[in-house]
Image 1 (cartoon, rainbow, N blue to C red):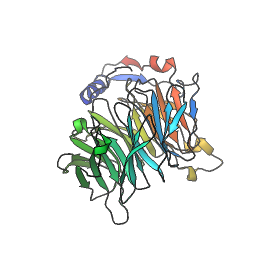
Image 2: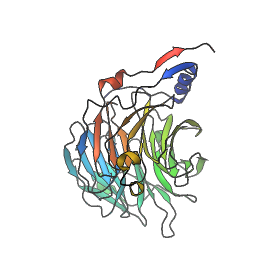
Image 3: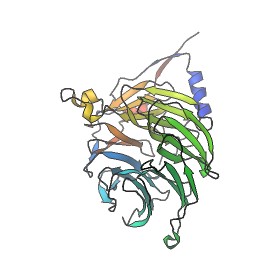
Image 4: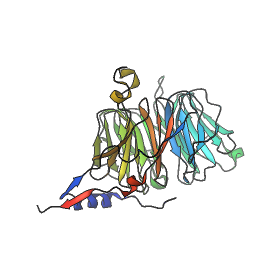
Length: 366
C-alpha cells in the first residue's frame, strides 16, 4: 500500500492560494488511459449499486439490484464468490478493517453480517422498511444502518454493537436516531465514531452526535438528492455526489463548501484519489431518457476526472453503456473501479502518463 497523505483542508486552501496567480494548462482529455485495457467483471445480472475495496486493496466487493453481493480479486478480476441470502436489491456494503466481516444493506428489510472468507451469513437484523446504508465504526466494534422512510415509518439511524463472539450478538441497539425531515440516502461515521454524517434526499447534509443522538449541524448546499459521500483519509473533509449535477467538497467540522465540480448530468458517485490531488465523478443521464440515436455518447456515461484544487476537468474514461452508479479508488491510488447500470464492474489501471502528469504553471505578476 502506498502510504501517501491527502491534503488537509488547510493545506488545500494554502495550495489554492499559492496557485491563484498562475496560468494553468489542463492536460488533453482522455490521454491517460489508452494503453491500459480495463478488467471487465461480469457477475451481476442487474445494475450495480456499490463497489468498495478492502483496506489492503487486494479485494473488491460489489453489490447490485440482483440481491447477491460479490467479492473479487482486485488485481485480475477473478470472482472469489458471492454472498447468498438476500431477497431484494442490495443498496450498500462495508467491509471490516481486518477484511474478515462484511455488512450489507438491502431492500428486503434486512441488514446482514457475513464472513468474508466463508461466505456464510453470521447475523441478520430485521427491519420494518428497506435498509439504505450501512457502515462499520472505527475499530469494528460498532456499526450503523439506516432504514428508509416508508409506510408511515420515519427514516432512522440504528447504532448496533458488533460482538467478537457471535453467540453474544443480539438485536439490541445502542441508539436510535429518528430523522424527522427528508430521508437519509447516505450515511457514514465521523472521526473516532463521535459523529455520524448523513446526506438526504432534499440535498441536506447533517452531522449527528453519536453519543446523544442530537443534531449538531446541518446545511443544504445541494438542491437535489445526495447519492454518495466519501471521506478523505484524515477525515478533515469529504466529497459528495448529487442529482443536481454537482459534486462538492465539505469541511468536516464546519460543513463549509470548499470546492464545487459542475457537470451536465446527475452525479451518482464521487471518489477522492488517495495519492494525487484528483477526484473522480461518475453518473450520466438516466438510461431510460437516452435516445437510441444518441446512445452512450449522448448519455455521457464516462468517469470524469477533475483537479481537486483547480476544479478543472483533466480526463475522462469511457466504456460503460449506462449511468455509472458507483466509484472507488484502490487504496494505493494506482487503479479505480466503476460499477454501472449496465451490470458490469470495470477495473482501470492508470498508465504511467497519469502519474507523470502535472499542470504547466507560468508565474504571473499581478
